[in-house]
Amino acid sequence: MLITVVLPTFNRAHLISLCVDSLLLQTYQNWELIIVDDGSEDETATVIKRYTDARIRYIYQENAERSAARNKGIAIASGTWICFLDSDDEYQPEHLQELVKFIEVHKPLPGLITTGLITHEVQTTKHKAFLELQKNILEEIGSKFLIPTQVCVHRSVLENDRFDVRYRLWEDTHLWLRIAAQHPVYQIEEYTAIQNIHEEGTVIQGMKKVRIAEMEQYILAIQDLRDNYTTLFEGKLPPNYFNEYIDSKYRMYLYQARQNRQLLIAIRIWFNAINHKTSGYILSEFPKIFLNKLNIGIHAR
Image (cartoon, rainbow, N blue to C red; front, top):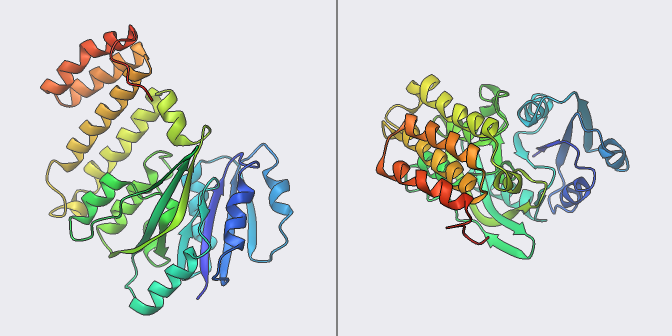
């Protein structure tokens, strides 16, 4: 069974070798790697060209963001199942072997398979909680955030559903939810994917400085599912699910902006949140914005 791994990258010359090497160390060897360079301006091409393995294919495109890069990889993939690997993440050596074993033993219908995730941050290693498959799987995916590195999807599923190129935040969950509303979701309860959390990554950058444009894009992606996929989710999620989800994201961004003492940003988020949903919680947040600016109520990180 041929497995395709799609790897989008942008200016990760100093990190991508660890990522590619983890694939070369796989105990299962019948794979192809499609690296889609999304307009890198560093030495990414030079680093990749050092690899002479015929299974590695490098494609350069003008910068169009990671959704477009992943879609390009999907379009030319030859594998029956398509896995994803972000250019700062890794696979454990048995990652593909565990996936293939699961597929051969269980013969799953076309759908989405996820594996366990290990997160590495400085000197901290954590094992992320598995999905609880007996619960509402859409709510589980919405709350537990599967990252691409731990996901493998049957190629037939991706013929009609791809990453939405309008979004570079929440674009993965946007796709997983659409897939899970139409196809089975399976889980391998082995920790075979590794997420490396570092200073340059989206997670840390988003915590250090909240940007209104990023928040708005995140919210727009959620609103898109709410407004344009009503039939797809009807009866599969609580009626007010996406509105409550938006409310929780406003709270998340507001808290982070307060803690960062980003006064004007926090005020703007607060007004967005109150316009979305007036609540006692949001009203109580307003004075905290100014207290945090005065370094009162700041939580240690």
